[in-house]
Image (cartoon, rainbow, N blue to C red; front, side, top):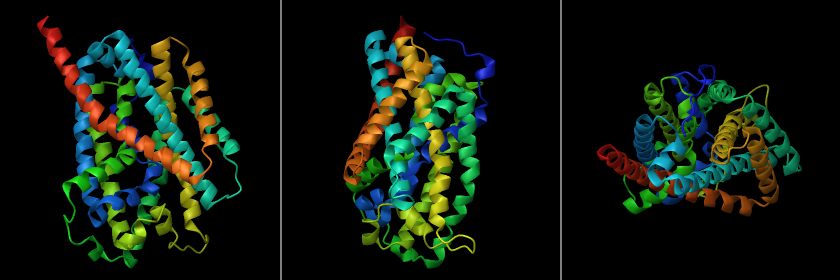
Length: 363
């Protein structure tokens, strides 16, 4: 059932570019290079271009469904599969969003523990971050959008830091081009799915956009900016690191920041990790806003109550993920799920929706 959103709760279409880019550009930026290079080596930059292009197609699919339905993920599911099966798929999608939120939160806490405070316990830091998330999400979608806007603008200076390693880079490392099989490329795209995820939350906040159909170009702009930024980082990383060494570096971006020397700070990577809290926070906020709103629509409960339950689940699971190997396995598991949801389920949903849409017109 579609409900009309009050005008004061809507956001301008151009802010969708910040919502899309802000949720894609997360903690994955600090480590995605290794995951891609593991499969295709110096051709990893090609995988970035291909993945970015595929995401543009998926965004087009999402907007095609949303513009026809004038609703969100839940109305699309119900129209395509019926009430009960549709709600089941919606619940599974909410669980996917929750697992992604846990991934982002725990990955950032791990980085802080390794690079800044080795003795820091997980639970107090997770509790503080989740309390901030609760405050932002309960303030409404416009507050979440504002945080996403600041998360793109405020850390923008870090883009300049990716030009510093060029002085010490060897761009012959990128040769020869197209040196890997199509199968290897597909595996690398699978590895990049976690870094490019975030655009799918359009399925949740589409009704909160003024003239939502006009926001499609801004969603594409956001993904284009993400793709170009990832491409820059990937090319610089491949030129800076030896290919075999890159495969064993856990956080290549942080390693590149280590070469930056400033008169007033000895370890620039500490500034980078600290700033990344601003980048990471809106991603988690939008995830929990989406998941709690989904629970509200499915089970007719207050969004605040749903949010508290989801935050508690996230907090509990994050505290149990203590070892590096366990965190890595969990991240790989969520990346696997994300790949199949984004690159397999969304196209299947698109096809099924249009079959039902055409059948409905004939009836």
